[in-house]
Every structure is written in C-alpha cells, then in structure tokens.
Image 1 (cartoon, rainbow, N blue to C red):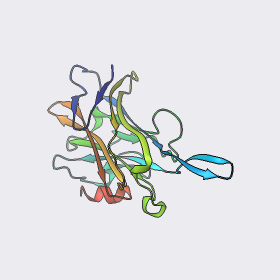
Image 2: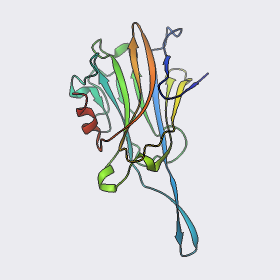
Image 3: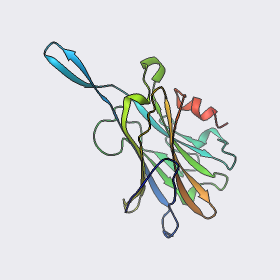
Image 4: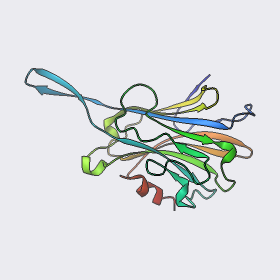
Length: 199
C-alpha cells in the first residue's frame, strides 16, 4: 500500500523489505491550462514546457564527487550502473510518470550516501518559463520488481519564479534506505547549474 507524504516527511523504504534492492522513481507533471479569448470564443491551451528529471549521487558531505554521478538527459546511466534514466520526455503529456529513474540499491557505491532527485525546465530563461506554470507535479517510489508503489509525494507549493525543483532524496540510514520528501524550489535554469551547487 502506497503512503502519501507531506513536505519534510521521511519514511523507511527497505526496513521490513529485505529483498528490496531495485526501485523505480517516477516523476510526473502537467503544464497548467490557460484560457485566452479567440475569434470564436474562449480557447484553452497548455504551455509547451519541457521538464527534465535528474539524479545527483552525493557523498556523505552532500557533494557530487565526480561528473559521472550526475544522471540526466545527456548522461542516462551512472558510471557504476546503479542509477539509470528512462530518457527525455519533452511534453509531459498523458497520464502516469513522465520520466523514470531506475535505482539498484545493491550496486550503489559505498561512497554514495544519497540520490537526490531534481527536475529542471529546459531552456527556462529563453522561454520565460518557471514552475508556476506546472500543475500536478509528483515524485513516487515503487518496487521495480513487483511494480508496487511504496510512497508518493505531491508537490503542491507555489513554485512561481523557480526554474528547478528538489523533489526528494533516497538516502542511507545505517544498513537501510529512506526517502525524504523535500519539495524545495531553486533558481537553476539548467541541471549543470544545479549540480555545480553540490561540487
């Protein structure tokens, strides 16, 4: 049974689930619908927004120790093979996850303490777009083997003016792994700008 979290809540993912090593982190969003007056009455439209999910594999000092620990639209797999991106979805159209990140906990190197999951808007500055133009954003974590959703966090804050979102993190807690619902907006028009904050 999936647990819905609120901002700041933490939950054990692996405690009591000894065989759980493979996770699917799903991220979803929809552009808000805008109304404009057209020649034949009111017209509804959705902005053309390209959101990009990424994962930063950080050490115990919250640092991105090497470039290969950034998994994103241009680097779909970590050097160690423990974190893999599903590929870029440029529209956010349709139901369900827009992008997914697969995580194999058993293959994460010992020097990686957490996997931080973030979302940026591609070309946010050029297109004058921000997360105030996004609705229904969420992050969820599922058991990759069974498909069972373990936890979901709906990002409901007002993120107007923000070009990046820190959605949540999967982190070590002794021999277990936990999830932390963060939901923090940031100014970082590209994932590289955000990643540089952790170097």
